Image (cartoon, rainbow, N blue to C red):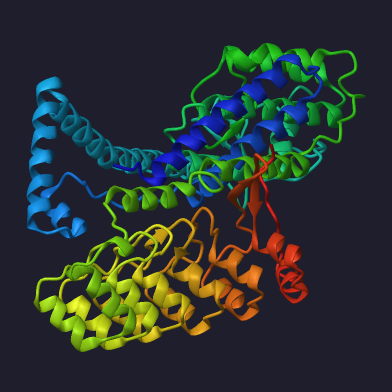
Length: 571
């Protein structure tokens, strides 16, 4: 049972968060103490890149393989073998003997497999439910904190700034019995809330400038955005230490700004010590200068350093860090499921083909072989007669295909219709010969494609070396067939190892009109996938790389004008 893509994306976010925590902690441990802004920007960039990792991993999650047919199943043997009732009975007896032997050697394997499958199914259901319930709880807590902050502002009394008391910016002030230290509250019109009886002296200026620095930087909005991210990613446990590091760096940064404006760093340090002794609980969305016990020593140490006011920041900024981490995520996350894990779909399809027995047409002279030959020639009446005599339409002939594939190649609509009416499997294919849908799509026979769809054919059936229906139609430039398949739900980014993607096939053959239609359906112009190895080295192909290699300049220009890239994974 495949793991859902959302769980794989969640695992990718968890692993990325753990690595980023290690990066931030290492920088905090070994970088000089005066790099306050750099600590803040690195922690903020690490947090903001996590949603990008989730989206990239979710988009690149591997395609679940189709259900496998058990060759030991008697019903499957009847359909796939096509060797008559005697052989079916032999295969049924062999399957029964194998099953009895397996039960004798490992008596509990069936029970354990069933228990594991049930457990995995329950886990796949339970984890998303837990995620949603947890997000709801965190959203309610955020709403509660927001209402508490608004209530605190409503119950405060406006307090004018005393004449002659100069600050670097004018912010409305109010006093409240509910606070014990100055704090910044609000978003569109932030105000500084002061405890009742607050003294406007020289010791107050650095503290108030600290809150003004919060307002100038827009820290209240940053905290709100981070709380919203916490609602979605509350289960990412490494996110908590990142938040703690960011909060400590943000307060130290505002301390430094206040100290530079007032030229009184030691006065602010003493105010922090006093505030720490009288620390009381404040609303979580409010920004207060009151330090936590863990951050007090670092903040006082930064303020009392001899060169606090003279040190300059390095070029390491959020504007450089965030794009850098985003590009890193873009390079490494696709390998979580795009370039390599997508090949599992083609491998699984090939396994299905290999699980059913095949015969050689040259060695067969029975009704089934005659049915194949009649279907290949489009002989409708003979096909009907052979079916009435008991010929099996689902015999697989190695190197030739099935009777239905032969009918698709001959282009006989009536013959294909007769085979389907007799119970022919519309998805049964042969490695090296593809499937009925692939054969019809490659020839641009939209009437046959529609016939197969109406009989329940899977538009995504694929075989390595033959691709799938959309890849075949795109490679042969069958624009109308491409439109029909897309309307039937074909994935424009489908991938089959050895045949790559519809966009790659169209780019190789120079079909710009097909590329434009696939792009309109949402195909990724930069999707880069693993191709067959050559000389022991992996090859990665994209629409742009193939258009350049073949020399289709019109396609190259069209792709480049829309930002297409060749994103071969780093090695």
